[in-house]
Structure formats: structure tokens, C-alpha cells
Image 1 (cartoon, helix red, strand yellow):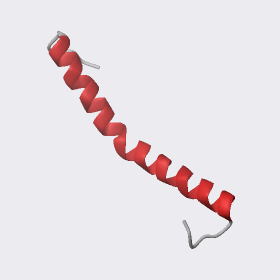
Image 2: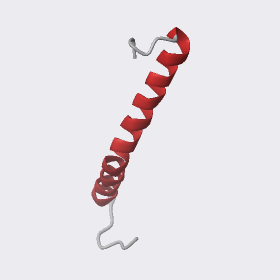
Image 3: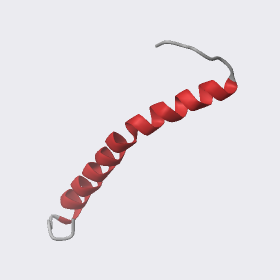
Image 4: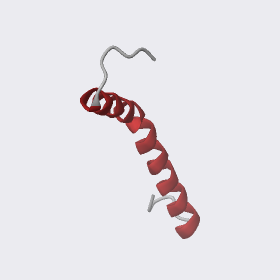
Length: 48
């Protein structure tokens, strides 16, 4: 990781970039776990 600028603002921007990069993965995992829990609890794929 290369740092060109320091300070609180730059750290906030870097953190926002990291969160934005991981967001699709997190959403996918949450959706997959939600469907799995629905299938296991109700045993009906039409509800999921």
C-alpha cells in the first residue's frame, strides 16, 4: 500500500474505498445465508 497523503481525511477516503470494494461480496453472502435459512426452516423452495 502506497501512501501519498496523510491525515484524517485521507484515512477516511481509504476506508470508504475498502468498504465499497467489499460491499458486493457482503451483500451476496447475506443473501445466500438468508435463502439457506429460509430453505432449512420452512423446507419450501417456493418461499425462498
